[in-house]
Image (cartoon, rainbow, N blue to C red; front, side):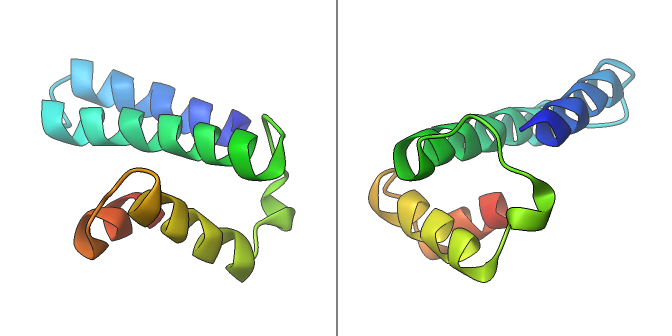
Amino acid sequence: MKVYSQSRDEMEKQYKAGMKSLSTYTKYRIGCAYVGEFMQTQYHVKDIALKELSLPFITDYETFLRTDKHLKINSAMVFVR
């Protein structure tokens, strides 16, 4: 989450500078919140090392988005990317 938070801060700077749209910035913030919630509910952690990200993690995250957040496939894929 530390890397995601740093990236979110960069996205906020770009939004404030007029380089990113409000919708892009909003989706990024929501995505960060979803990842945090997923890690806490599924893995009971607040952060995870990038090297620990695996295909099962991504697949579980997609399932979380589709079931817990009730997103359709295309919407879920926006957050998986």
